[in-house]
Image 1 (cartoon, one colour):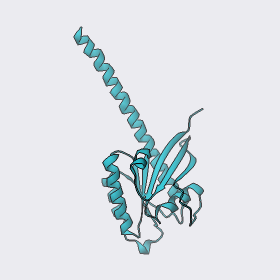
Image 2 (tube, helix red, strand yellow; image 1 turned 90 degrees about the vertical axis):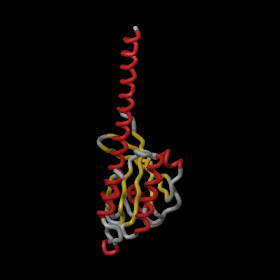
Image 3 (cartoon, one colour; image 1 turned 120 degrees about the vertical axis):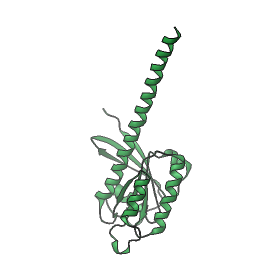
Image 4 (tube, one colour; image 1 turned 180 degrees about the vertical axis):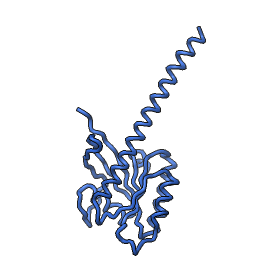
Length: 187
């Protein structure tokens, strides 16, 4: 049988921004309160393959988390400019140590339009310049929107794994070819 793929996702958000998103994704319902659990897990079928998604929900980044994560979700609230500034800083930290790790930026609380402080254009522009995925969602109203975020990131992680594998393969071929041709000239 096919083996199950594991994907480790680091979810970063200000105290009252990120948690809702994860719990909503994992339980399919909206809950207000939870304990201090940090890693959640669930299994999904994506494109016909079983994928175990491990989610480390955190407010700060440690080196350990940066090494552990296959992909990252950065959540801010569209009603809070401070939370947007915070993900900018997190992104710089991430890029310093893991240049090409897949990242998806998420503007949460889309349902609170009249309190909006960060425009959709700003979020989209940041994602574009940093080569990240981008979504605006309302965790309070939609399960589907949150699901899309996680599934998109899983897709990006699988693409980057495939790229790494084929890059390693190409390097291997180049080595073999140069070894063969190198010998021929020496003879």
